[in-house]
Length: 115
Length: 113
Image 1 (cartoon, rainbow over the protein chains, first blue to last red):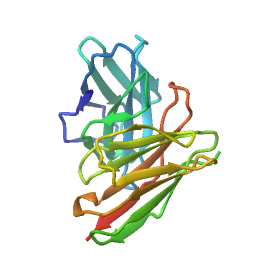
Image 2: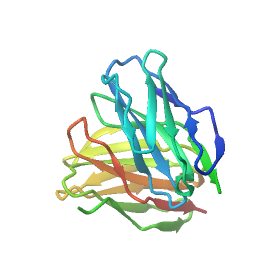
Image 3: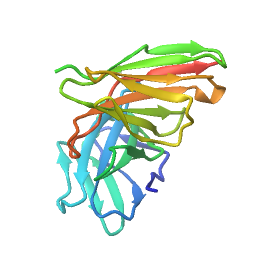
Image 4: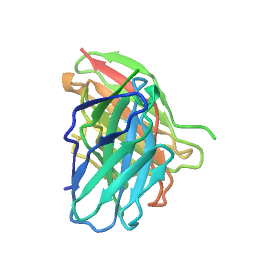
């Protein structure tokens, strides 16, 4: 069974700084998808960024980028120029490339942006 | 384009009762997945429905059951509620293409007393 580990329960950073959230996963599959979701206090889970395992290029979405290290099974999220609205729980998630599309989530990292 | 919606937003039940939660999928999506998120935890997969058929189930007992309708909306039913069923229940919809991303609704907060 796949597992996802987020080793940083909480992090805080000053506004406008850069922060990196860590995620490792365990799988025997070669093709899969990785995601970062953000869950603000409003509870709604919002997709931040997605990475396909077969792509060597790291995904980027504006201020958000990932460092995908397939051999190390590592998938970190970098947030540049952090903003107050980035304050939220961040979840790393894994999905197989076959079968049903269930997501396996980590336990999350609570990120606080300090004004 | 309409996003994923869920109802109700909050619900309080007592142990032993039954509850039904509802989810309307995003326009164009035919797959619905349900997750349970206990306080301070990541979501756990309950089950998934594709074109009205169950398409995978997580480690949840049979008292958790579901349904998907022809318009792809879905229900989650929980019988014989237990205190540990208190959680945020999230619904996510996606297209059937395996490259599709799951988009989540705002969730239903269930409290079992």
